Amino acid sequence: MAMPRMENEQEMLHALKAFGFEEKEARIYLAGLELGSTTVLALSRRTRLPRTTLYPILEELRRRGHFKLGKGKRGSTYTAEDPKELDARLRTRARQFADVLPQFELLRGTVHEQAGVTIFEGADGFRQLWQRIFNSGVKEYRNLTAGVGLTEFVREQYLVERIIKERVQRGIRSKHLIKDSRIARQIIAKDAQELRESRILPSDIELPSTVIVFGDEAAFISTRKENTMILLASPETAATLTTMFDLLWKHAQPPG
Figure 1 (cartoon, helix red, strand yellow):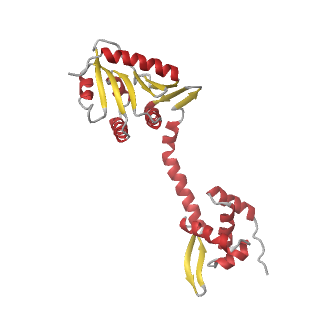
Figure 2 (tube, helix red, strand yellow):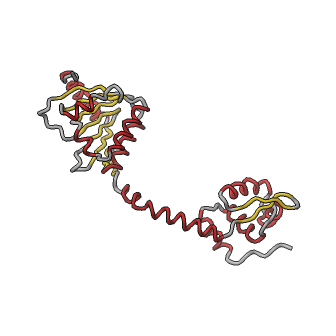
Figure 3 (spheres, rainbow, N blue to C red):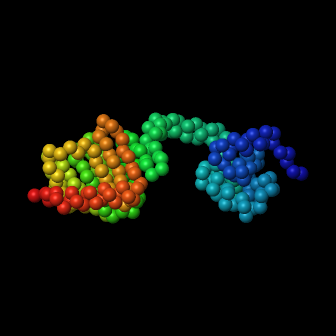
């Protein structure tokens, strides 16, 4: 005789789905709780699912820790995980999420997109901007900078070093027009190992912001005080800035 359906079954199925179970997974788990240590044949009869369907789902549930595989007199047995363990796992996940919630909050509002314009903010925005450059597929970009402004924007030196390392690993070269200074000379000294070619601009010019031109896009990186980066996706603007950069490049001094 068929076993009666359990009370509040739909509520329990809904709760399991909220935990991450698929419909069939939830039905199998509930059947496993009812039957205790059981066989695939018994689960098939209880859930009315063919054994060919049950085997891969049971294996997935076992992999996630929701069933334990054992040995009985008639072969393999399956035992559903104690619901208290599910509850403990869910509470652990909630605590883990709560621990990193402040980091998620920091990401809010770091990127604002409009037609052709993306605004980034802070160190997270800085990281995302460089990922945009890396993912663009370019093998070279142009950089107009005072050097000091860019390093002051991100005080986490490890982040700058990580970006340079990834750029080198990707084989992306760069041309730098850089305002002459002590920091500029330190940057230029690493040109060869960091796949960079630099030329020097006069030290008396005003260049508080950095401009990076790559492909059909241009990035404008402000000072730490303004804490803002603007990415403009515009082939015309990128072409204009490239022409201006190349004209300056012809007249700038190679490092000596």
